[in-house]
Image (spheres, rainbow, N blue to C red):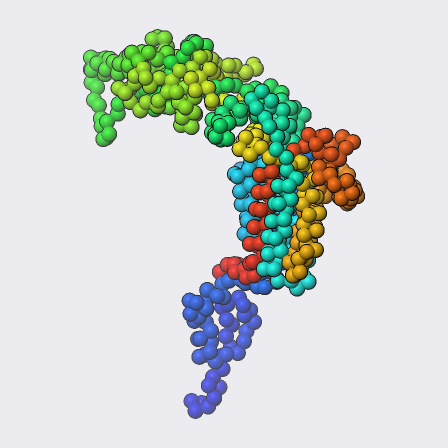
Length: 562
């Protein structure tokens, strides 16, 4: 070390930042500047950035990984996935939306595909697997074009142009079919196509009929509208899937509050209450001192009078059945039984509303408001027992507003029950879509092959670089029939090229992959239909999401050191 007039002392400083793990030589002034960064500099240091082509490729890889998981679940021979939640609950399903919801995808681009599947489920109800497989295939083709140096915006524009051609092709190959309340066969066939890839495929005919009858029971054919809220799918573990039944009314998983109350009530006049069967409680904190027998007896007598007044008000209105949202204690229960007034307690808010809609009753919040005009009416209310377990459910039939229906699903265990309910939901949505718009296209990949051929032909007329993106879109559409053939155990490329050449030579747009080994590729002969609105939505949603992913060229994420 030199004197005061000499050189400045050099200090060896190890920086605290993990970006500089090795000791470096800095003067104290420089060291002070580096170790005291401004908030903006510290924020920039705690972030990780991926830019340009690298970002686009990372995004495409994430989306393709998610799509690849669902690819093997597509079609009638698709495989199921078993998913375990953090608390140990198991879900077995091949429904695309359910699988992605349960997977808990953390990657942000992966989450876009989860939302894509959810959008298809909310809007159409079916085709949730196909839309993700198509999006993954489009991104795969886009990656090839990016490697060739094509700009992502031009790729997106080419995909949009191709999607427009595909929509026009779908409109041209679609067919309308007429159905009525007497002729439901076309609707049943389309619902059977939806159910053929589900766990219920061995009894898909019966299930499809239940779904169509349920939709027709609540449909307003003049306005072409269906309120699915009026269709309730209720499950009860036990029995087999074949024991599933359609009830023209409402089924609630409750029983009569007292075991000796009547189990079968004809011409039921139902009081629907949201007020509890108990004496009123003071709003403030209170304390009651009872120091003599007389006081206790007076308190018990007052309580009984409250119960007696409540029951009398119900009887005066003409009600012969009470449905209450809240519970009541043993004393109230006993008094209801003694007064021959059957009651059902702890009925949930959603079920209460459905019962009110079905029976034409009003929900009554206070006993004093109860009157004959507010009672719901039903032909029969009965308690049904299952098996040897003595488990029971209440069935409300022949309601005043008979539009509400229930499909009561049975199954060997909870997993089968839940998957059956999801399958029936898809079929109900398909039947609803057909009531709204009765246009169909043929399934088995025939629509995708027809669109692929049309897009390829249209690409030849385009002069700009978008023609390459359009051809890539046509190749991506082939992913659906390829996956169908692969999952059915067929030679995928051979099956696809054979059907494609047949469509070109014969001009028959109904030819698709023969997944069922029926001996014919004509989907009309196999009765394999899909809704036009569902197929259009698939292509539109997949194209929009792919275009959005391609436009991302800079990904900034918090660093692990932050």
